[in-house]
Image 1 (cartoon, rainbow, N blue to C red):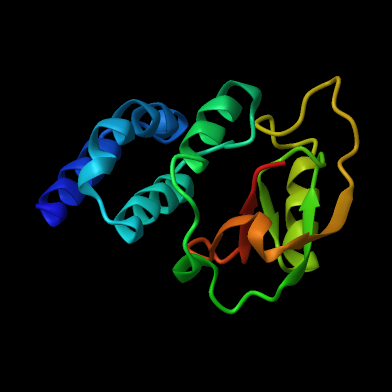
Image 2 (image 1 turned 180 degrees about the vertical axis):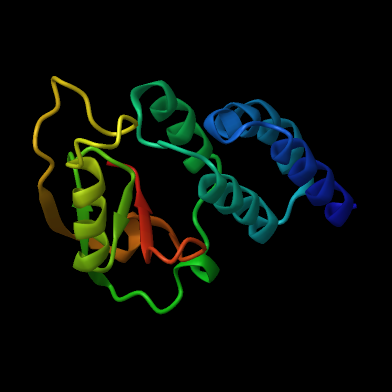
Length: 156
């Protein structure tokens, strides 16, 4: 039963546009999760996260917090992480998405500070800086490298 539930939910989420995949997940996951294993539950979350855009924006924050706290994280998606982890981010400290590599944060900093790119730049734009901090293993919801970003997701 679980594999059918997993497949059905995956297909439903795929039908949502990247900008609103979180809305689909937030609407559907509570109804499906009782039939999902922990691994399937977190796989759906990570897949949706990876295919979504601007997960830390204000309109998505509460939904992601609800989704990320429905179940306890599992070690399978945090394997090979140390007890204390140094993470980096371009932007504000209140974001969910961080990286293990400073070089990746620098790439995002360049993207966000690029005046040519209207998706990230506006006239009231402030210069984006690199932030780093240490978190504990238990603070991490999951590690994700589907986009080659060595991403660590936490709830700020």
